[in-house]
Image (cartoon, rainbow over all chains, first blue to last red; front, top):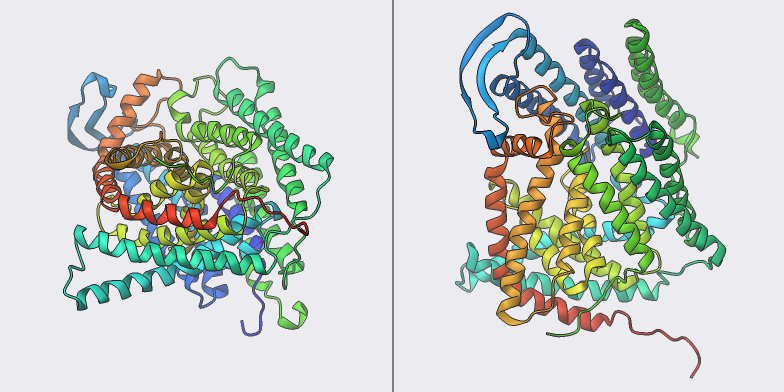
Amino acid sequence: MKGSRPLHPGAWWLWALGLATAATRTASPLLLLLVVAATGLVVAVRRTGDPWAGSYAVFLRLGVLVVVVRVVFWVVFAAPAPGPVLFTLPSVTLPDWMAGTRIGGPVTTDGLRAGLYDGLRLAAVLVCLGAASALASPSRLLKAVPGALYEMGVAVVVAMTFAPQAVTHVRRVRAAHRLRGRPDRGLRAVRGLVMPVIEGALERSVELAAAMDSRGYGRAAAVSPARRRATAGLTLAGLVAVCAGLYGLLGADTPAALGAPVLVPGLVAATAGLWLGGRRSPRTRYRPDPWRWPEWAVSACGLAAAAATAAGTRTGTPPLPAAALVLALAAALLSSPSRREAG
Amino acid sequence: MRARAVAVRLRPRSALTVGLVSLAGLVAFGWPLFVAPGAGLTQAGPASWLFVLLLPLLLLVALAEISEGGVDAKAVALLGVLAAIGAALRPIGTGVAGFEPMFFVLVHGGRVLGRGFGYLLGSVTMFASALLTAGVGPWLPFQMLGAAWVGFFAGCLPRLGGRGEVAMLAGYGAVAAFLYGSLQDLALWPFATGVSTSIAYVPGAAVTANLGRFVAFDLATSLGFDVPRAVTTAVLVAVTARPVLLALRRAARRAAFEAPVDFRRP
């Protein structure tokens, strides 16, 4: 894909979250494997040579681990399940204060299959998120944080820039200790290592703060008291509504109106407060990532996969989700914008 | 025994936001323990994923609320640099069972620079280290909130000096590291066991019965990691306390947080 510009990281995350939702809505192992295969193919075609592109393989291995752990749990801590018995493990019943848990016992084919499919579903969701973190550049994503989180974004960027330097610093101090014949490993060495590294880091932070101050960091736009009150009110009311909604969803005798009908407006209000709080930051973005038709296409495909899987599971038409997954694949592969179009 | 620096001031509004988000966060960690049988959310699948989607947004709201107006360039620079140290230390711990060296930075940072700073330091350190080690996943918001609590409560410890302070911080480090590990297990629990194994939670069972099942799950999986993590954190905090606290206090004094700034012509 020579000459293609990288897509907006938000598009990849929407696409992956759509596919992950599709994975949670289905119980069919074939569809789950199809989801994993789709992400794998898209990552193989669209990934770059950047260091974070390797995270897909990490998540793939993690997915295999999840399946294995889930199946082992099902075998060792099997609850009685119907179906033919494959084999019987020696069983122990734990004391009463541990809720009388039984370990071992008969393992049935149904139980084993359920464990395998459950693990597969979890693994598919993890692999989808792995695909997003392999395709979306974290630094571009940090550039797109809302204005209210600007300070935190800067702190994360500072941390990511200084972390490699801290590692080099530790190595240098250790080399110096070795040359002087002081211990360079073990608990005793930690004390000698921590001090110069922390001192050096704090020194650098003071310099950095001076540099930021002198470049006008931290200038905020004038915010009218009305808007400030609106921000505070939206945020706090939203959070209270979220807490009430959670209580309504988890409690038994709570009225149904206290569940989702309160939770969702609360989330909307809190998000609005976040957005309104960002208006105090008068900064413009340097070369912002555009959001054009390829971004629309990629994110729409992910969401279409989620919607089609939900609809297909409800109506019992398996071809529908499969077709949606193929669509997700096609659009993600085809929508590679050229540089010219990016302007 | 000296006046504590407050690098990030928590206004009443921010404190209220942090409290509400922590309440929702506690529910996100512990919902399998006290979910009612007839509730709308008893099935393992949708409920677990609801909290995975909900928690990042709530955490963003809390961080935005704390940082609004309260974070100047010096606090951001200190935050970034201390988070860099924590993030750089994290890969060291992956080879050893449960060893998590970044906690000592959170404990000392929260202690010297106050609870608001500790809260920000915990979440920023976790986020940066996840970006550096490619560990962005559904577990990240839970880890961020846990680490934020570690830093926050380190800033709430009572005033004490000398050896007593070192002992108190080491004890706090052990307790905090252990609770952090248990909370992460609690978040993992519904994902790892499903609903029908004998160590999975039972929707609607008494809290004690579910707690017993959780202890069984914890024993089966990660208690072997939590205990060594608590011990190594306490040792590391005790060994590094004196020099690191001194260095941080010196930096906080030099940075002169809360010094009034006046631009009027004299």
